[in-house]
Image (cartoon, rainbow, N blue to C red):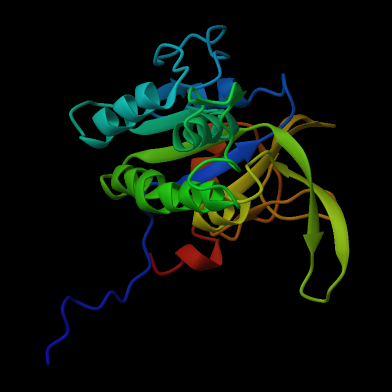
Length: 242
């Protein structure tokens, strides 16, 4: 039986997809706005201070879904979709899944009470992310559009492969979805103000959760161009044969 498609043998650089997180005021939205031909999907009503192309404030999931599907259709000239922020987008998805406007015995519906209770709503939310949200992000990436997810900072309890548990700062993501979103991303970067100014950390430290698939080991200036330059640096081991 023949193989269903050609075997890929060369490394390559595709449109990047990843998360940048940091405290309020560090410059996450400004960073996103300077990406190549960017549009900000405004899920938390926090982008009005930045001069850039952006959606109106999208306060519910149907509004967010409409914009994501329109952007995924490819009928536009944008090259970067910036979600501001991922934590608020996931909250709107959670509200949609749980039926937040549904009232039962005078109580507002919650994720735990939805879909028969006993945690069924959490599984439905995970399925929605796997079956709808990540595929629509992948549609964007596969068409050459970068996806940048901005997030706030939260403390996470991390257990190493040696069984050591520690606390680290990481992106504020629904606990049932954090691992999924981090695994999906090509990079997870921590934005902070260092001694030399605003910088982006893409390698994990004792205090910060971070990763990248481009072999970037040193801090970068908090600049989209600096990130692109580091991704395509021929000295990065992963890109030598690209």
